[in-house]
Length: 244
Image (cartoon, rainbow, N blue to C red; front, side, top):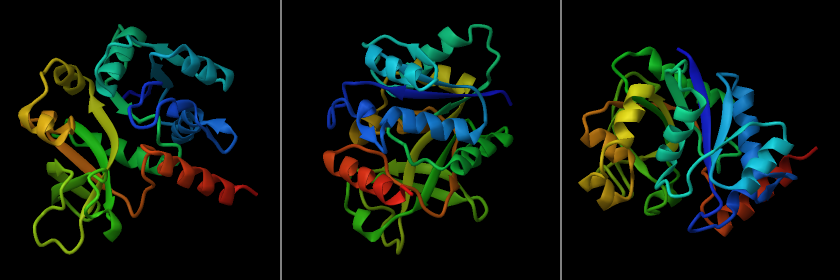
């Protein structure tokens, strides 16, 4: 495999505008996320952004950014556009999509998601973790319904914001990291939004409806991304507790 890590980041977050540059532990959040990706040491890392301010912050931290069209509708479209610009000769066949609001992503978890690509039947790799009871009824906590493929792996059958499956004692939370085969990513962004995707507001359902196989590596625990001011406050408190 020849992986590349792409981090989509934009200023226009609907729920928390400007969050990519929100200060976390003395650094912009996107820079903290960039550092986690570099620590994973799985391939070159670029931030894909439509904002000069984000590109400047990344450059100031010694990172690399790729500028993309502000009109692109999603992070998946953004990384596909960045990939085409950065790698026109198609040297990279696996793309790791790490969201820009994951400054606590464990490098080992990124490596676990990438390892799913050792199975040629898998089109997309992702992550999952046991869900806290408090998240059961939270629509922001996306649940993954899957078939066990050994103790550390699921084959995804569905993703939902609702508590599911019915009667389960313990639900499984999806962690929004994606490892794409290049052909799968390029096919995905050429597809229109699917009915289930529009219903749940979860674009990974487009891949499932198109017949792509998504497997998830199970990890013991994982921090959630940052979507609200409360998430941001919680994350800042975590970094403050972690300072020496």
